[in-house]
Image (cartoon, rainbow, N blue to C red; front, side):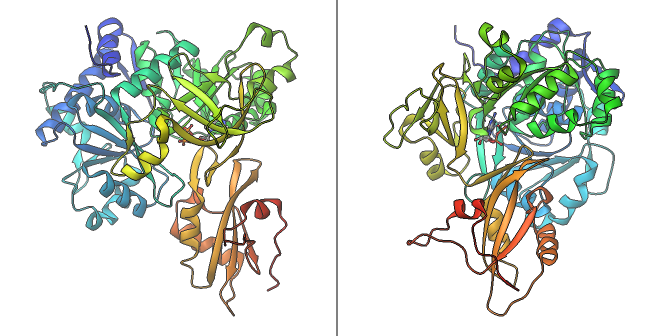
Length: 523
Ligand code: ADP
């Protein structure tokens, strides 16, 4: 038999086997799998009654809440495609992504209704606006619709290669790209995750990672697959996170290294009373060995390090623990855990190749680009065949990440070919920030690079050259940036240079900027 692989099947199973168990907890609201599934079906029925059909896109701008989670089931089971957007973006970014995805319906939490109302003229193709929390003129009320609509709708045939979600990611170009994830992609990532990070129905998973981020690294379905409980968290600050971890008996979570750092550096009294034994999956940026060690030693948690990208659903490698690792002293063990590791059982083949396409030797020194091929690789970038062909050239997903391979076959990321800055787990396109900075009337040229940052791991640092005779202060540039881009993209430092270091062919030498050797302008 051949039944299409789809994460929706996990929900079917969970409802049957774990109907009475807690599916989701969100600010005191608790739904069993039976109630949760019924709500998903009602939401599907609502969408169908609004005219949403197979293949239609639906954009969602929401914090980690039960309604956001419900959308990860209700939309795909109609054969429609969920487009979860990063809520930290600006209204102009929302407009671009909603238009680019061709979304017919937008749903949002109360924090984002004003932003969406301000761009209505720019998103003429959106037919319906749904407010997740409460009524408002011009918005349909989610809870009201769900309450009055019976859970019956027509289920279409869904193929495993049909689109499940479109996840926008900052690529190396200034415009974000829509990563098309299929039902099959997500299914494979869920299964692989559970093989390397096993969970059961007793697990209680805390939503520290935003659900919009590569579908919460597919945990929106992974937790359901085992009948575990989704514990929602709208905002991650250490005090709230530790309180919820203790009160809800949380057993696992996913977090970018920056979140781990903030938890590991929380006030002593919070750390001392923190629940022990929590299993943490970290990815999104390279965690320092010291961070891993602190989390393991001081909190008594167990860290699993994974690497991936939105384009690969997202997991490509896991730092699989071997018996010999456990025998090592803590510091050495943490150093090994900080490596990105080996391919997952289900992720397919991973190679590190040189510029001729040959695998680099396992010497822990020779660097090459990580490429991957397997069932977790996206079907392509939405409405961007050129970028798709480039990323998937030669039948391999080119990650733009540079690594060495150690003698034991474990990879370790050392650099990045792509012009992306990863700050606190958020991707920032340096090109995008540059293209905004040069719209300032005093700025002639701008170059943005990632610099090490204590809190965010890496943060954008802007180097600008002013127009002849122009004058501007750092503060004016910062204020301008804050008005013009999402706040997480605003450079942490601005430096005004006489000129940008360039090659003979005019290419900006970003490595010179990173080294701090560029000549600073005297104003
Ligand atoms: P995600 O952050 O969910 O992994 P993104 O598509 O936002 O996915 O970012 C992917 C990029 O993040 C990778 O190409 C890589 O540069 C970086 N990255 C992800 N995980 C790691 C990791 N464990 N170590 C180092 N870099 C990582």
